[in-house]
Length: 125
Image (cartoon, rainbow, N blue to C red):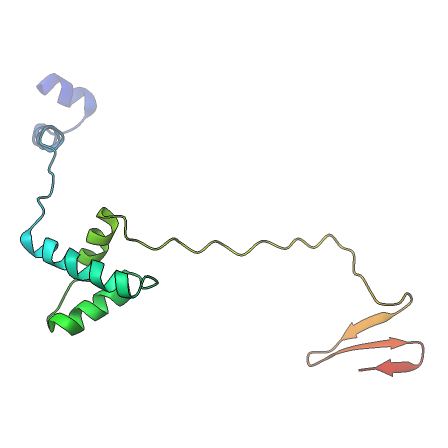
């Protein structure tokens, strides 16, 4: 083991710690409190299906009258596939360089407050 550590230029204690962490995969046990919260979360989601985990957390805090960690609610909601779908991004509008006008030979100009269009000497606001 010492030769491997010298070749990798890593301390032996660091290597032993890494081996311990990978060999014993830690799985979180579901607590009774999480199960109670899940029941309450499902009740809230049945009444209000558009509420996300933040609003659900606020309602849980209000109904139980105690502090509840939003990260815990998020974890429970995520584990049981109760998360809302993410919003899609707005479509990107590409400007191809062509400007379409109602009539030909119109000139467009702009100051900071309004856009004015005029054809010859006539001003249209």
